[in-house]
Length: 98
Image (cartoon, rainbow, N blue to C red; front, side, top):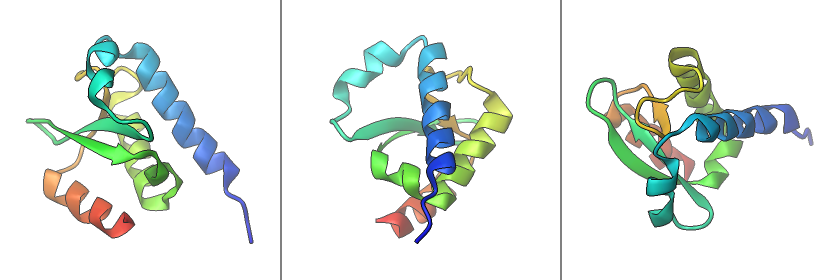
């Protein structure tokens, strides 16, 4: 049994840094339940999703975070974590993670 701490730590670093640069994080964090976080998904028009923190352990979700890091760095235009993929792709991927 292997422990994948570096990937999890990388995902947590991405979220931590994006939160530091988020100018709207305080206004949107109040309606997110404990154990979840908000992400904005889409190419041009963004839709907000609330996802469980347990997704951070999933390699496919970590890949999405890496893509978001490459495209946006840590300055996300929506004020929260933005994932640049089609909404249908995100829903398909996350429905497999439950």
